Image (tube, rainbow, N blue to C red):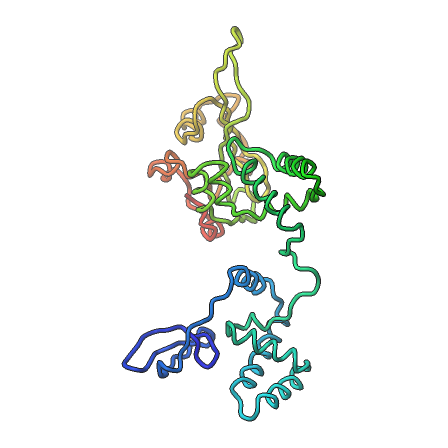
Amino acid sequence: MLWELRVHRFEGLKGDQARIQDPGSGELREVPVAELSAVPTLPLAELDRRLERSRTVENPDWTEAQRREAIIRQAISGEGSTAARMQCAAQTLGLSARTVRRLVARYKTSAQTTSLLAHQRGPNKNLRRLGTDRERLIDTTIDQFYLVRPRKPMEEVYREVVRQCRKKHWVAPARNSVLSRIRALDARMVARRRLGAKSAESVALSTPGMLEATEALELVQIDHTLADVMIVDSEYRRSIGRPWLSLAIDVATRAVLGFHVGLEAPSALKNLVLPRSRCASNTPRCPRRAPRYRRHQKPAGSCSGSHEPFMSTMVRSFTVKPSPAAARNTALR
């Protein structure tokens, strides 16, 4: 809601009095309902532009916008004639009276501090200059050649755009112009059209982040992948299947501590748990009196995929307790 040209959060209603809260200061007020008004609706493109601007704005620019807001609010609701108030605000801000009137109009539209941020110089990166016909052709080509299954590379989409433009005797757009429009597409929509609903859900639920470790063996990351090779038998050369590769990598040093290659799917019990009897036996691979090098040390914490075999209670009980740094990363699963 708007009250005195300022956005407030509506908390409740009691008779003809409304309880509102200033989102900036958190102050609660009770004001007459007649003094409230609805927030004007801005176009989605303008809202996106302001949101992106608020994320990348520098502190000096934001401080200047707040100073402008205080002066603009005083010029709107102050005493005296409008021309005198605008002239006083222009002198205080060091701007022309026409610029101040434009700022007042922008502020009255949304009553947001972002509306008073100085416009960045240079061309608008989101402005498209190819014309309606070529823009429509690019959008149609992307929809018919890129957002389809089986997936096609972006370069093929660009070649099709060039072919269609030459057929119509138009000037073909630059390669980066086509690729930038593809990269600007919504990732979830692209995954749904090119990969399917299941992959689109994994893209939407993915959580960004990183694993941090400062010492060797503080945190070991275990992951698995299906190798892009095909194993065949030695006699008839018939396909047996694709092998699974399991890797244990130290996060701090990026050293590969171990690996396993096999045709069976990843399993904590089959691939990653070493039987005690094997280490206890006096074999050349694991002698009984082997020196205690640091590479024989157990990791302080480990993390693996979220597959069901690795999330079982029995497997989790085998994992040693994490160090404080590993616990802070919440990477032990």
